[in-house]
Picture 1 (cartoon, chains in turn cyan, green):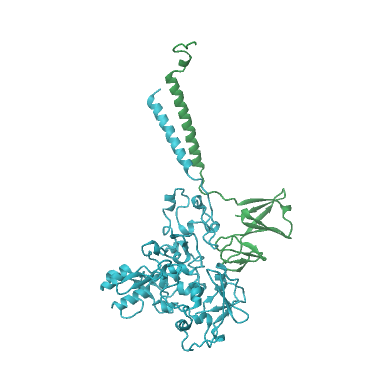
Picture 2 (cartoon, rainbow over the protein chains, first blue to last red):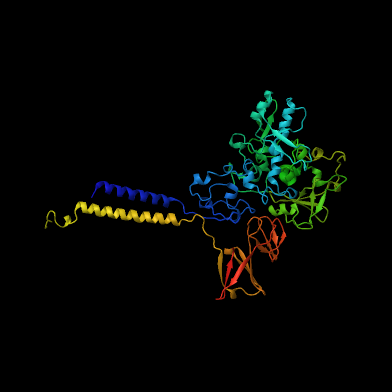
Amino acid sequence: MNPKMFAASTLLLLAIALATWQVQRQPKPIPLTPTISGETEYCQTCHADLPEISASHPVQAFGCIICHGGERLALQADLAHSSMRGGGNPSSFDVVQASCGGSECHSGDPTSQRDHIQRVNTSLQSTYAGAIANIRFTFGAQPDLTARQGIYAIEDDPATSHTGIMSLSAFAPEQESNPALLTFARNCLTCHLSSDPLPGLAYARLSGCAACHTPTADTDLTQPLHRLTTAIPYSQCNTCHNRGNYDLRLMEFTPRSDHPVDRLGDYYQPIAQFVRCEWTLDCLDCHTRLEAMGDGDLYNNQKEIQYVQCRTCHGTLEELPITLRISDPEDIAMRMAFLNPVIDLKIGDVVIVTERGERLWNTRQLTDGTYELYGKASGQRFTFRPVMEIGCLQDVEQQESQYCHACHAVER
Amino acid sequence: MPRLPRGGAMNKVSRRGFLALVNRVILAISGLMGMAGLWRFLSYAPQPVNPVEFDLGPASDYPPGSRTVVHQARAILIHTPSGFSALSTICPHLGCEVIEIESQYRCPCHGSRFNLLGEVIQGPAGESLRPLRVQEMNDGTLVLYTH
């Protein structure tokens, strides 16, 4: 017996045993063949415990790969995750078209408002065009407050533009001569949907679509829940809008100091006065999807797109709020109520609409002429009356919310 | 106590012979494990084949007028006076499974609605539910084909 032959045989057996052991250590693949792709993926081998991300995206129909990317047949985590889109956030704007786009998904028909990606890309929350224009004008880099630059370059469709702003070029700090603008670029560009959050656990938030539509765990603000929702509470808005303000003298961010304990749970700080409903409702109970996500046009500043006022729901001394009777089962109000069924909206119901025709689909006119509103996140029911029927002394020439605040601020 | 003679029965298999035997056993085990691994490798099907034929059992189990959901096939079997037919319950919009509510098929994902013939009555789906083939076999059983 040749000792070398014996050693070689033993090594061969050990090698095969080692390979067998390695194979046995791998988890047993759990296949899923989503209907939409028909291609088997093994993501659930490790992620079977994740909850459904939403009722509109069941895993049996969508699977994981179509949104997240990744290597669908890989069983090793590193390999499986190697080609994921946007890391853990497929709604990041640099990959959102591949993750969420498509004519049947979120790059659909603009006339039926299924073009979510296009709209959000033109929205002020994404372009930050108002702030950039304001600062550039203040420091002499442009002659007026018209938006010319955004966080990224973007064009609007000339045929559908109502604002007349056809395009924005990318804000390029290196081309600015005023040092204040360089400081602004360095310190003050954390307020748009593509940016990373300010450093520190207290300012953790998500970016892209997830900034609004994906809540984080209450116990850990850095951990997004596996959830997409249109039931967005005010605390989600507070992740961006209740941090503090930029100090334009110092060109740096100043955290709010009056309520440092519960920034997300506290009321929105930059507005000093609140009426009772602003105090009680969530932001999106009144503010509309076009205000928040844009309507596809490029705008100069927030004031141009944020238009809902107290009178939208309450009317004025001379006019009732605008209403619309729902007659089309595919009316966007019905779609929104289907996605977030806090209200049992039916054909024939009368809802309040804004001056731009947006349905406040969570409202309904009651038979006695009053109205009800359901909280989109809370599901809570509120009833309210039009101003015409109460003894309001409001000056008919002063109909904006600021004048309502004069009497109805929550402190009063 | 009797002592075994040196070089007795224990030496009938020499050390060299014993090692050769062990070597053969090792090689045999290695060969078997290698063959098993090769078989596993060659027979590995990363894409499981989804069934496209479903034996639904005796046709008599489905009385006239019945509409039976066949969950494993994602289909609904319909028995009308003109015979058996079937519809896919997969919504043609984005692939969710429709459910029957108030004499309509409704998609729980995006709200599409279809009548009992599978025709669209409300979008976003733009197509009807897909009709499927049902065959009654000679032995009286039904077979549903999803492709």
